[in-house]
Image 1: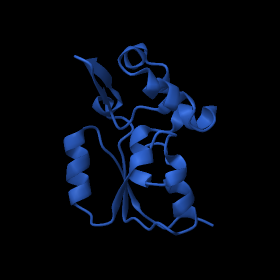
Image 2: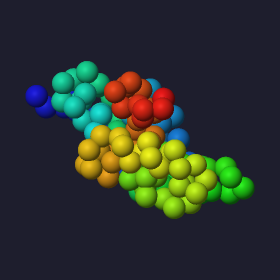
Image 3: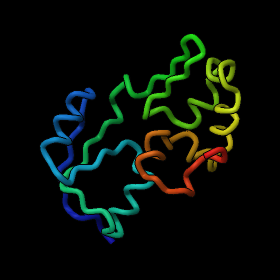
Length: 127
């Protein structure tokens, strides 16, 4: 089955993504699309617009300052699993991220995608 028609926008900043989201009641954010693409093909999701946020570098950052770990929504499970800073601050996070799915899911799946999709099957073992 084919996905329904929708407008496609590539946001270059968080501000632009917010503006595009505000312009449509039925817009959805997308980066890799692991969860959203199958829903589109089955027509279980019918957004009027897809807003691609995959190029927003600020959302890919992982920082650790004074023991506080901040993980951007576009950080992949592999990014988290392989981060020495995260491992030193909270080794449990790197262990959990390294055990999610298979290599394809770890390399392409994002922490933000898991949260937004809200599928219990996508939760890490500590959820």
